[in-house]
Amino acid sequence: MTTPTVADWQSPAMVRTSFQRIDSFLPTAPISRGDGAVATWPVAPAPLADLLVAPELGTVADVVAATETDAWMVVHDGRVLAEEYVAPMTPATRHLLMSVSKSVVGVTAGALVDRGLLDPERQVTSYLPELENSGYAGATVRDVLDMRTGVRFSEDYLDPTSEVRRLDESVGWAPHVSGGPATLHAFLATLVAERPHGGPFHYRSCETDVLGWICEAAGQAPLADLVSDLVWSRLGAEHDAFLCVDSEGSAMCDGGINTTLRDLARFGATVLGAGVAPTGERVVSQAWIDDLFAGSPELVAAFAAGPEAAYLPGGHYRSQLWVPPGGERALCLGIHGQLVYVDRAARLVGVKLSSWPLPEDDARMSSTLRMFEAIGRLLAGASGLIVRRAVARPG
Image 1: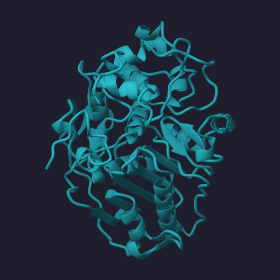
Image 2 (image 1 turned 30 degrees about the vertical axis):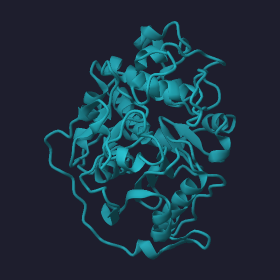
Image 3 (image 1 turned 180 degrees about the vertical axis):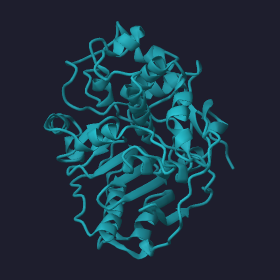
Image 4 (image 1 turned 120 degrees about the vertical axis):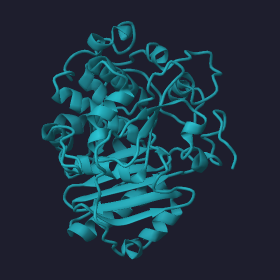
């Protein structure tokens, strides 16, 4: 098997291999599962593969086959209804989450807020004086959590000159060719503001990297240790996760977490459980999760006024998760097809790890969401989520 390199690992031909072998060619830090017992679920197989998603899409099995699936899983009422892997993926394989990582960082921030260590209303620079001369001056932690700062940042994955690709260079995810900063924190300090903070939602990966850095300052520990202590060690995880880091050891918070399918489902079950993990241990307060789902007219208006409005009409973005209209579903989304789908009405957690050739694909994301909607309707008898255009942005 060809070993991926920094130069080629994100190419269409390499993503299936590289997403399952990140620690073979990039520096990482462990996220310990701790020494607690593994939380297990009873297995109750259901014939979901034959469920019709839509006439033009076929069945669940057809959607899984057509969307470069590496693994997928459905948990309902604490029972595993479906769990499948496509070789070389196995139950023990730790897969790159891309921007699903953002939601893990968001819950970690919530746990710090619960402990009185982090105040969302304080300014970013009160935690990170290193950013006093950057575009983050004057922004609050809440602005960062909800991606409503005024910082200029292009998330165009296919533009080699975009800020997101320069971020990749700074963290060591791509060859350093631009001449820009060679570390993540140095890169973040170069970002500038182009509009007032607290305005429209605009999806930008840099926000999560700043949030993770804030968490480290507030929690006085590296992010991998904070995620372990506050989240992962409380889930009943089977395996340690791991996190990509740059040459200085700074965490790649916006997309660098790697974990197994089952442990990711345990994280989703914690969101579904209003902050209580499958172990019965509280990870984050119910107030934090309730706030995430509830949204507000202001958040909906901020989402509608932003450039991603067409992706999820009537929805909002809160604390690093996407929330469709209705307040019963939440999505953790990552490029190349990573997804955690939480449906409170259907008492459902769906997880899918994938290796799409390109970062964004409207058709693949739309069919994947419609697949989980169909499963949710089957389980709850409720009307499905209407997606007018795919939520192609990661979360």
